[in-house]
Image 1 (spheres, helix red, strand yellow):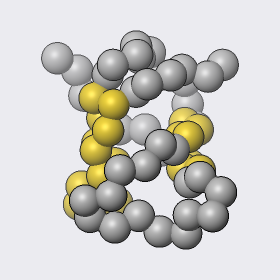
Image 2 (image 1 turned 120 degrees about the vertical axis):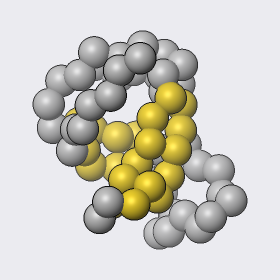
Image 3 (image 1 turned 45 degrees about the horizontal axis):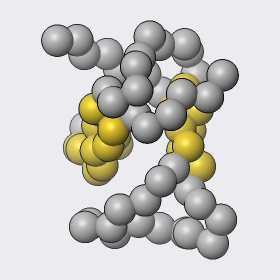
Image 4 (image 1 turned 180 degrees about the horizontal axis):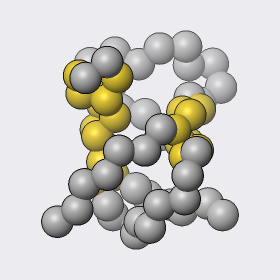
Length: 62
């Protein structure tokens, strides 16, 4: 069990401007600092102290 807070930049698929509740989307997140993680790791996306998304790591890009 581990928790960390890391800032990152999300990249939505081309042609997608916004994701609404209930939508499923594949996106790329570039973290500003390296973090140890494995494929299958679950994560939450938070903004302004609120959880706005959740997901699972499907691929790790170097």
